[in-house]
Length: 368
Image (cartoon, rainbow, N blue to C red):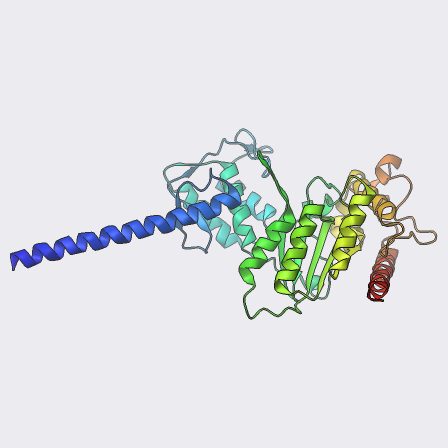
């Protein structure tokens, strides 16, 4: 009997050892997968969190005096306020409004109760990754819209700051995701491949190829991203793909026109739009001359780069929406920025209709 008990004990030890090895292998695979997305620093120790499917580093505590430019934290301060749990959760919510406050509070408290250090940049990287898993809820006024600006007001106001690409992609009628380009020490990750990666995790064998994919983006896709978009469309036989852009990407008109040609030939619509027609009333009151000026600069480039193409943008007669000189250069006051707001919507509709008609005519010629 004693010998049998010893044998059983040995079997139990072997079983537990095997399970631990398998668990370690699974954990290592998870680490490798997230390292590709957000780098090594915030993914050295991982465990499955109770809050969501996102993976949370363990045994860390928050370093309140670390710096995080993305959150506006420097030297233990956020403006005039000391960094605290309250200021951190508020900053996360402002940066990632589609993540619920309950979820944010749960994660931040869990980070704060651990033993090792979470820098504020680690927290930003973690919530950036979590944000990729979270659909952006549609506001009531957005339900029937194709063009969707970012939900974060600061990003809407600085939409013309084109060194950072902002993409909001609509899938079907009521689901959207937001991504932005990420600058890293070893290069940058564009917003378009991030969106595609997320869609690959959603699309399955039952996915309807006629589901509309509609992107709103401040910079049109670069040549490399165009290739990835086309591969994605072909892989899933997507039949309804439209990209609305403000600023034509590319150092030359030829670069932009090549991208336009490649997308159009694959049945992907690339259409210009004016973001000011989709700002809220509060946005219009808050926007500064510099922010308005950056948008106007992009719209002048839009006219120049689309000239002679199927999506050519022609300023309407007496249309002062794209002036020869920006409001910033003119020194226009805040109260004068949107004196023509009643005209914005009809003008933007005309621009969209003209671009769509041009794209359809181009497709007909190609078929002939």
